[in-house]
Image 1 (cartoon, rainbow, N blue to C red):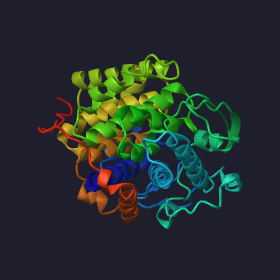
Image 2 (cartoon, rainbow, N blue to C red; image 1 turned 45 degrees about the vertical axis):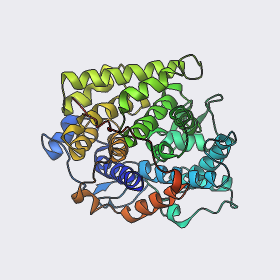
Image 3 (spheres, one colour; image 1 turned 180 degrees about the vertical axis):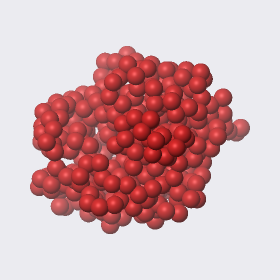
Image 4 (cartoon, rainbow, N blue to C red; image 1 turned 180 degrees about the horizontal axis):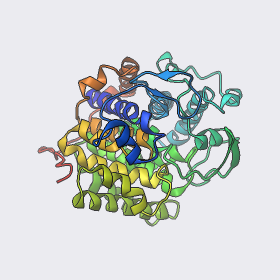
Length: 387
C-alpha cells in the first residue's frame, strides 16, 4: 500500500503544480492563447495570484492543495497515536489535531498571521510536515473559518462573516477547501467505507460547513478509497452515499453531489476527452462560480474518466479550464495515484517537494503497517475508466 499512497500524494502534487499557473486565468480561450489549443501540459514557473509570494515561483512548487493534504496526513498520524480510527473516541481526537494542524499552516498564510496565537505549543509536530508550512495561496474562506473560536462540525457548521485580505467572506463555506486536503484520510486502515465518508465529512466541516461542500469531500475520499482497492470508484461511492440519504445532516448535499456526478458522467459519454466539455460543466450543473465544491466535484469525475488515455492526459484535462485548475488536478491525481497509476517522470523529476512528500507517505504508513492492506477481489476490478 505504501506505493499507492506515495503515488496518490505525488500525482496529487503534480496536478497541483500543473494547474497552479493557470488558476488565475479565468477562461479556456485565454489558456489556449497562452499555451496552445491543447492547453498547458508541462510544469512551468508562475507568479502568485494572491500577492503572498514575491517573485517567480519555480516549476514544481506545490500550493495550498498539497500543503494542506500533508498537514492532514501528519495530524492523522498524531491522532492514531491516541486512538484507533475505528474507535468511538477517534472522531473528536482527529478533529482536534486537524484543527491544530490547519492553524499552524494558516498562521503562515497571508491574512492568517494572528492564528499563531491559537496554536497549541504542546503538540510535537514532526519536521517533515513543518516543511509544508509556508505561504502558498490560501483560500480566504479557510483562513476566515480558522479565525473562529472553535472548529465547525457536520452537526454544527460554522457560520461567520469576516474580512480576509480586503474581501468579506461568509460561512457556511461552499468551497472546495475540504476536498483538496482529504486524501490521507481515505487510506486510514481498518475502517469501513461508511466510516471513511463520515470522517471525511467531519474533516471538511471543520472549515467548510455547507452541506454540499462537506458531502463532496466525503465523495472524494471514497473515490480514493475505492480506487486503492481496485473497485468501481464511481458506483461504489454512489452506494455508500445513498446509505446516508435518510439523515438530514447529509441528505440535501448527497442529492446535489449525486446529480453532479451523474451530469459529469453523462457529459463524458457524450463528449469525452474535451477541454471544452470540462470547461462547460460548472454552467451545465447550474453553478456560476466554478471554484465551489459542486463544480470542482463534477470536473474531477469528468477528468478521472479520461484516465483511459493515461494519468498525464487526465491531469491535463483536469487543469485546463476557467475554474479551480490546481485543486481539480490535485484531486484527480490523488485518485489516479491510489489506482496505481504512475507519476510522469518529466513531472516527478521537477517536483520541488518530492522527497518531503515521499517521506510523509512513509510516516503515514507507520500508523499501522500490518493493517495497511486492502482486501481486493480475487479477480481485481480494473477500471475501464471512461468506457
